[in-house]
Amino acid sequence: MNVMFLGTGAGIPAKSRNVTSIALQLLEERNAVWLFDCGEATQHQILHTPIKPRKIEKIFITHLHGDHIYGLPGLISSRSFQGGEGLLTIYGPKGIEEFVKIALSVSHTHLSYFIKFIEIEEGVIFEDHLFQVTAIKLEHGIDSYGYRVIEKDLPGTLLVDKLEQAGIKPGPIYQKIKSGDTVTLEDGSVIHGPDFIGPAQKGRIVTILGDTRFSKRSLELAEQADLLIHEATFSEEDEKLAYNYFHSTTKQAAQVAYEAKAKKLILTHISSRYQTDHDLDKLVKEAQAIFPNSFIANDFMQMEIPKKRE
Image (cartoon, rainbow, N blue to C red; front, side, top):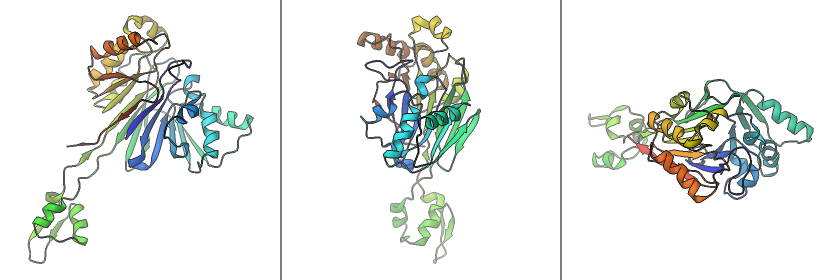
């Protein structure tokens, strides 16, 4: 599991930052990529990465401002020409289905696959045996959501060395032990499955927030997240400007990470007014003063989210 930032700018493209898109790569977990937002030229950004559009199975849109959705029609169309045949599911606020369907209809675009639209409300919007995704509405003037992606815990591995030391040879009995069953051997001895299973592999949590003012609702999404991705359009000295435009500052993003007890914070959606190394260093230091494990995203930056154990 890792995150790749395809676009980290705010509002309009800049020379060093494209508009917003984030890829959550789940290649080991489900051989798929989940995209969060799809700003203009996202498909061009993907050309500079190993990401294969056919692997994109879900797209989560935080809100319907242009810098988060204008890349959708192009990417959806190109996916047909790049081997994409599997179902694509698009999640987003009310209006996302109309936007996409009109763009495809007017341009006479024909797809080689089906699109399923889920216009979301607050709560659990996706769940299977591996993952759960929850959406909560933030504060941005229009409906803007944050997403909390939870990887479910995996059972511990079978301790084969310990079984062999106990004189238990491989066979169908291993599967029963791995299931946690109590097994009686031919000699009458009893084996308790849990004694031969390693510690559970705890699931990871990734929180990706849409554009928002500083909001306590963000805390619920970010609680104990392994990775929190939070917009930081403005520096702390521009707090009034951030409030007026329904955005957050570096300091406010760090405050969310601190109060939520997140493990790592990545700042993104950076205004083009901050372009020099000095500007960017200042933004990072503002966040690190409150939450030391803070970093600023750049286009094409990757962040691995390591597995953890109890």
